Length: 231
Image (cartoon, rainbow, N blue to C red; front, top):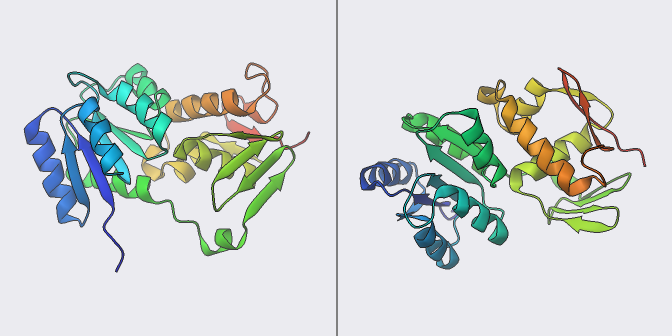
């Protein structure tokens, strides 16, 4: 029997933390809580979680800074919670390293669906048979998730990695916003185009020689993106 997956909940409102602990524990997850970013980092260092759920507005260290600090330590999936639903706030959270964003108030079933999606990292049987991808300037070790571009290893967040692999597997094809969002984030996200703007921008900064003049991830105006593998 496999060990339960670990989730670290970070929120300075005790009632919300209790509700999340109870709801997640009832679904078989092992849960720890922290009241701010500093406590979360301390807990994470001794109890490495499989996923982090964090509020944005907290004393001492808020959710945005926690995302940035966690990204320096780990590629753990991060779901951000906030009462703020503006696109700018979502983009800031995603840009800081979050993988997903849930606006308060939210239903526990919705959050659990997001948790399952974020934890769904297991490769398919066909993918397990292929250990490496070599395409143009790109070399990817699917077992270690190591990505090398032009001979240099780059470090990606989990969602950046998933997006890049999907683009590489469909090199040369025009992929619409809806297809990409559905493939990487799920069917409930097909209208969340800000997700793509943020993550494509982050990927370009890491893989393009000149992000302002992309060579690999090309924009198809009003439609989506196309991956160009030609050297």
